[in-house]
Structure formats: structure tokens, C-alpha cells
Length: 85
Image 1 (cartoon, rainbow, N blue to C red):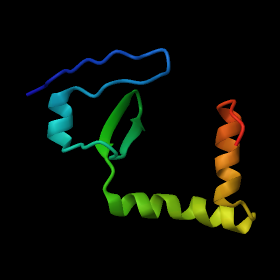
Image 2 (cartoon, helix red, strand yellow):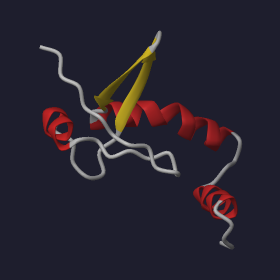
Image 3 (cartoon, rainbow, N blue to C red):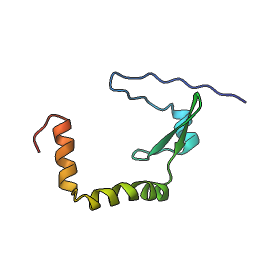
């Protein structure tokens, strides 16, 4: 059976996932979700914790190869947000 759910996009590009879908996906605060584009559709999936580690591994390796430290990342985030580190 097809079920439709609606959410409204905020000016910051955020949405609230309807409670029925949060329960269905067993989403908790702090969980990561994946948006997968398939032709003209987008699928939403919960990212298992084990997948998050393997997803982040190549990014972490690239940073290490280039000498980018966690402090560098924090400073870049602060700069992007318009704050001093």
C-alpha cells in the first residue's frame, strides 16, 4: 500500500522527518540518514553505524595524506560560519 508523507522545507534547507517515518526507520537523535538519488526519485535510508565508519574512512585518509588536522577542520568550519576560532 502506498503511503505519502509531507514535510516543509525551512529557509535553511532543513526538514522534519514525519514521526511515522522516524518510527519506521527507527531513527534516533544523532543518527545519520542517506539520501540516494535514483532517476527522478530520492530514497531515504538510515545509515548503519558500521557503514558510517567505512563511508568516512577515505575522507579521513585523504585529509591525513594532505596534512589536514582536526584543528584545521574546526577553523575552516568557524571561518565558514563567520566566527573566529
